[in-house]
Amino acid sequence: MHLNYHSMKKFLLYLSFFAISCLTVWHLKVTPSEVQVTETDSTLRSSGPKQKKSEGQAPSTKPDLPPLRQDSQAPSTKPDLPPLRQDSQATLEPTDATSLEEMGETELERPSPSSSENVPSRPLVAESNYMKSIEEITLEVMESEKTLEMKDEVNGDQLKRISLRKTSFKYPYLIVEESLTVNSDGEETLDHAEALVADHLIVNLKPYVDLDMAKEELKDLNCSLGDKITEGVYLVNLEGKPSIEEHFEKRELLDEIEHLVEIVEPDFFITIVKMPNDSQMNRLWGLHNTGQTGGTQDKDLDGPEAWDKTTGSKNVLAAIIDTGIDRNHEDLKANMWTNPGEIAGNGKDDDGNGFIDDVHGWDFVNNDNNPHDDNSHGTHCAGTIGGVGNNGKGVAGVAWNVSMVGIKFLSGSGRGSSSDAIKSIAYATKIGVDFTSNSWGGGGSSTSMKRAIEEAGKKGIGFIAAAGNHNGNNDSRPSYPASYDLDNVIAVGANDHNGKKASFSCYGKNSVDLFAPGVNTYSTVPGNK
Image 1 (cartoon, rainbow, N blue to C red):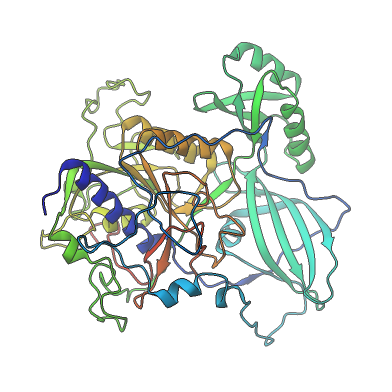
Image 2: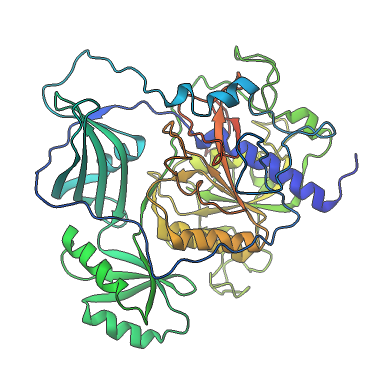
């Protein structure tokens, strides 16, 4: 079959986002952690974005990148979805019919039994991976408030807890909001957590606002205009000593400046979905499953069948928005992008995109032009998507030939902020990528981020996102950024080598588009490993 350029581009896009879940939805065991709190009568504030008026969703302008789901039982909000598999093309077979049923509202929504052994004598918080990451960087709990939301003697009382923490994060002061269930023995189970930066906010200014006037008005509130994120979107610094009360009070005051401010929202704390340290990860069953790992034959991406039709094209540019990429890795180097508009090392912004010497992408953690991977997560993503094929070395990616650019907003510890994520998405749009890989999540819904993703969609850029790894139903409790209801967002869950939903993967008939291999996979890591 002959593939023209546009068909090849679509085909490679499909192949590449199928590959993303091979490392985006990893399983880490939940472990308990002791957290002491001080009870007060304070109520938990809402951390969602403040917006003056509702905005309609912009229609899609992506006619040649059709959405990916067709489900006769649960119609998608993304119409005109073609089926994933056609007889004339070899693509992903994510699960069988039984597996799809299991991803609905059947067995997965029944709580798993908990062990009564070794019950501690004091309350514990069962950590999610997200909360575990917060605990790891916490230096001091400066404030803590706990509120009883609902009394329930059968299922456990519902509590809300909010704390101010000093951390080792890039932005040290975080406000952490937790939803808890407490049983009759006083044991606390964490249902949901999100963290946000305490001493600044993301603000969308009204169009044509005079910045000097804005700075003066902000000064009256003991605030200051901070970094520009994208056009019309800025960080606003909250001056003075951080506190929970001060943060939410300033949010309310900023929201009231209607002639100046359109949206006020938090800058959420974001993490990667972590990799296991399992040295026995079996190699490449996700591309070609012969049952070599004890799984079911042909529950894979049909890699060989796809490669008979195309092995990719350097004309397709993929952005790995993550921890960076080891661009000198022997199995990646030939597929790494070089900015044709930049002259390396001359200290000038040759292509006029606002970034000096961005020859290989950009690092928004350190604000420099070296998006090197000091974690390994981004390099692992890159190898799954575009490891050089047929070179006698290491692994083969889904696309043997492709161009990849590293855009770093997650630190060596795998942590970042939604403001830096927004900058990364906007940069990818500016340099004209074809799609972005987004193996990260955490925090709540951000209108500013949704707009950045939507703007990318208007340029024909696909946004491929990990569905999440907390075994949640994204239909009832959204997981961002995968749950933004936009035409160009593709939410990917993880399946195992039997074609079944991975035990840890999030799911949702209306909110998760497809499943791809994501358990015990193998790919590149920094240092030619």
